[in-house]
Amino acid sequence: MATDTASRPAESTLENRGIEPVPVAEREGRPGQLFWVWFAANISILGLPLGATLVAMGMTVWQAVIAAVAGAVGSFAIVGAISIAGRRGGAPGLTLSRATFGARGNIGPTLVSLLSRLGWETVNTTTAAFALLSLATILFGTTPAAKEHPVLTIVAIAVFELLTVLVAGLGHAFLVAVQRWATWVFGALNLLVGGFLVATVDWSAVGAATPAPIGVLIAGVGVIAAGTGIGWANASADMSRYQAPSVRAGSLVLSAAAGAGIPLVLLISLGSLLAAGDPSLAAAGDPVAAIRAMLPSWMAVPYLIAAFGGLLLSNHLSVYSAGLTTLTLGVRVRRVYAVIVDVTVTFAGAIYFILIADGFYGPFIAFISALAVPITAWVGVFAVDMLRRHHYDAAALLDTSRTSAYWYRGGVAWRAFGAWALAIVVGYLFATLGPASDPWFTGPLADTWFGTNGLAWVITFVVGAGTYAVLGGARPTSDVPLEVAQ
Image (cartoon, rainbow, N blue to C red; front, side, top):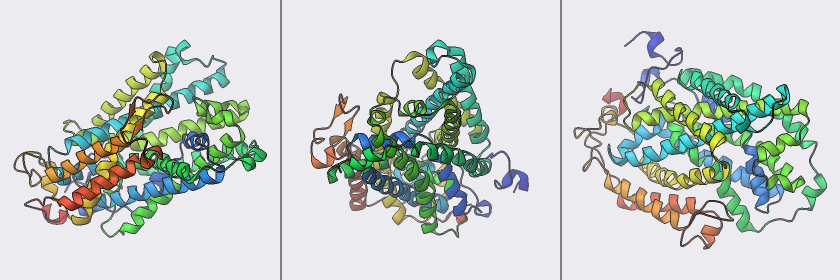
């Protein structure tokens, strides 16, 4: 074994490990660490537009709160459940997925996961750059139009990306420490700004709102779940792989559900309050900028700093996970270089969407939402496999050749892959993708009760999990405990 400085992530500045399983002796993490990781990743100011979206759907504030609790807490409970696999196998989620789908069959879910991560990182980077540009407008008197200041725009993007690499590149232990302590700083700023915004709420308009039908509430739960926890599900094991084997499964579920649920419910509820009192907010093309316009300059500064910080904390975790996913896809570089590759892609994407493209949020969020269907299908299949598999073969997880115990037939576990593919097809039958006024894809069953209430992702999960449960999963020739494999 190497020296303590090099081998023990709890004491190391730079994490040198890639996707290889963490030895049991080095897994000393506790659920409290994950609580802060998930809390920090979800104090992003983007929770406010989610609340505004619920009001735009016709909900009252109380209905929006119910949707926030059910959607955010419930979906992150799923995240916590999937993270149990990370504690068992000590490897990233998509690496463990090789045991479920096969060395080659896992390429499909891994590619989808990477596209999703890069997509959300581009959203974070673009939004954070807009926040910095707005801050420059207040502090230096520049014009708010990004295209009039290309150099300043590129600098804003570069600052955000550099801060992301500094944390995500150094690795797990440093990321956990930063997420915990930065939560207090940016959480306090959010409370300050949130308290001011609550004082501006038109309470008479809030009280006069008419409740929406139960179907709208159900659809709202789906919107929140798809926009929060579902997108993180296949990244959950990336953080839990350092958890001690003695950590209970229920503690992992609670750490994710509470850690992410608390800030999300508060921010989504605040967004719904603001939108209920000011209907124009719900219809704004950029609700983040619309909320900034509601604030005096002296309060807009901490608001924009809080927005930038929250997006940065979310991006730290996303980029760290994307780096591991890139390695799982077969890119042969060190983990820190994989992080740099991913950040370079999102840097170029942010430049394009800010300085070249005419629009950004609508079509891009629709694209990312489309990826929620194959991700949910993966969650369904992987969850059933977790119920049957309690150990992972460490050597087989890293062996993508014909000698791997997870090679199955032609490198594909066809029962798992078939269930995943079927769930995707069925899910898209019920899906509507793109703006409601002008969708670019409408499934033939989108006008059914499940489709109109935004439950395509639920159908996807049920079909994926149910099909795989009926077909039964293939068992590798060498499914031995990780401790033995090492």
